[in-house]
Amino acid sequence: MEENHLPVFGIGPYLISAIGIVTITSFILSYYHLIPVFKMDELNMVLIILGIILIVLGAICWLLAVFNSNFDKNVKENNLITTGIYVYIRHPIYASFLYIATGIISITQNIILFVLPVLFWAFLSISMKKTEEKWLADLYGNDYIEYSKKVNRFIPKVI
Image (cartoon, rainbow, N blue to C red; front, side, top):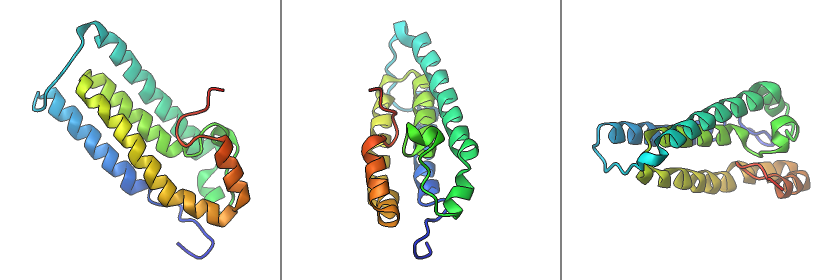
């Protein structure tokens, strides 16, 4: 990172790779019954529909963050992005991968794997707080601090 300039990718590829590897591995292990599989038959279709909705929501969130908000251009110009999807989610790119991973886990219908999205959320929250959010607060000061008080990291505020 250059002085007073955020990297375009930050720590994102490392965090997302870890989540992706754990999600895909869990899906495969569950599919082949190499880990305990606890299903609730009455919820099968609900979990599949929920999974599809989360995957689509994650894809839309990613597209809005990357293309609609001119992410690359704004980062390269050191602009704090607070418009578009960033009005609702502080880290929509990370959120999109969290939603997609949760959708994949939901499709497995293995109730035991539902601990993973909670762990992913905690992992991302701690990582963001220690790295990118610290960089953003140092670079943008009070503007970022006020923004972060109004907008959640990964889940939009309902009220």
